[in-house]
Length: 302
Image 1 (tube, rainbow, N blue to C red):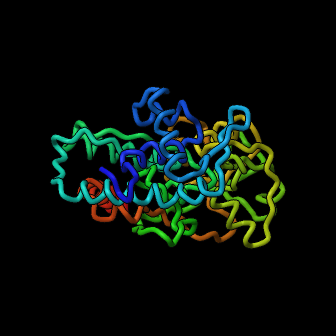
Image 2: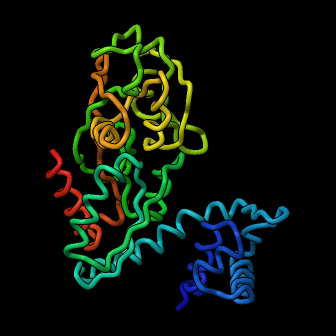
Image 3: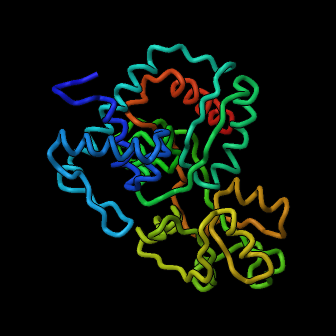
């Protein structure tokens, strides 16, 4: 099919190229051979009278026109995909849909494992890919490359729809062998001791408790920085270090590790977890169904 002389099938190849910025990956993404992809690129260059990209070693560098085409091309294809999807009735029992979800390991351990049991009872063919946090999760939403983002509400972009899930308290954990700490933890002890803290993404973004502390001008001494919440308790065991953790996650690990859970010696807000999705998926039947399952499981945890 052509529109103003452009073969619209070429938009799929263009989108893959502009998204992947790699010829081999773009070819694989849309199941085209290398010669077929090269032919599609040649036709696109001829139509737009522009190179669209140049090669700098093995790296693709987009021309100004290539950069300008990236967002509208993806938006067009997403709208077509969504228009087709909303016409179809979603049958969970027969579906083999795969959902891609950006989620922290705290939510994966405490919440998502429960959701899997819930979904498995009614949709045994549905599968999931859990994607780790990066620096720009909102960009993945904009590009439609993920179905959902499960994230503290305070960090969410207001450009996409979302719903709150549940709230979580923060607590401190210390090793059972730590004789420096009694039944309570004073603010002075909290500030004087070495901490274990999680940091995320290429730029090592601080976790939410660190963000709240910095907002109040409080800088603790971080002895060990790890890249997931699940690693935190293992760095506390057999040491005099302490950590600030989600209460449910602390209780989970206290059942298998020699940890004591103590109240925080300073008032930090509860963490409000939320569910967000691309605006173009708002009326997608599959998205609506899974949103309902996620919200239902969240209500069961309150």
